[in-house]
Image (cartoon, rainbow, N blue to C red; front, top):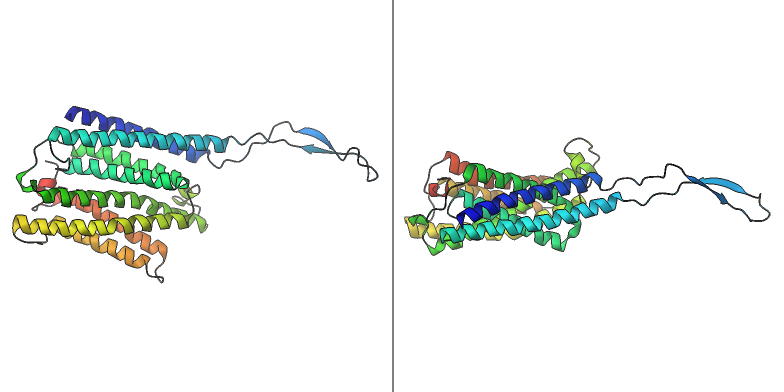
Length: 322
């Protein structure tokens, strides 16, 4: 089962990569101008109309059917189906990893990243099903999937191991599952957040990089609403996860909070995301300022996941690479 999980991860990365290329094709050929025929035919206009000046010969240039939009739509549909296939392979990798370990597959950084990324792409497929017009965001989402999964395979991979005694508690499922779910939604939420900032700049007339990447994205207002919806959905779950972690810490270590590095950074993430939601609800705060706060929030999540495990030692060190 462990070997099968590893193979499924590899196939999933390849499928995400091909989906990303298909989305790039959709970007490249979408919204292209119509092609005019090279040899326009001449057509008689006004022939047979009496009394007003006889015939008038005017060249009329028949246009070929605009095939670029059809090609872009086809590439986008292929990308969506490939993303769905990749998500199925990805889920298979998570499930077979758990079966091989005979536990929930969340015992180390590799397994955590594997599951968080799947939550992110599963949430994206739900969004895509409800709002197909957002499909072009898939280019950025699949790029994130490829980068994170490749990093997990190259730098975080460990062989299947039994769960450490400190994690053998029903609170492991409650706390870690909710942290994973909220983190996966935050992962998805940062994609429309970054896209909104680029698209907003494009709509304001900025034509330099990276704003040029956004000229074929959906309208900025819709991207901003999606950003808020995802974060408003994930934040209560994240709050519950932090509280559950404190309860587990009280049961395991005799104190609910001890400013362990992971606890500290979880608190920082909570404060930043609460600040985002507060800023988003404040009319005097511009939407792009609030969106930047959401992006900073995701950076704190990455710091808690990678930076704390690589550079700090604490009671959560068992969640590291080894």
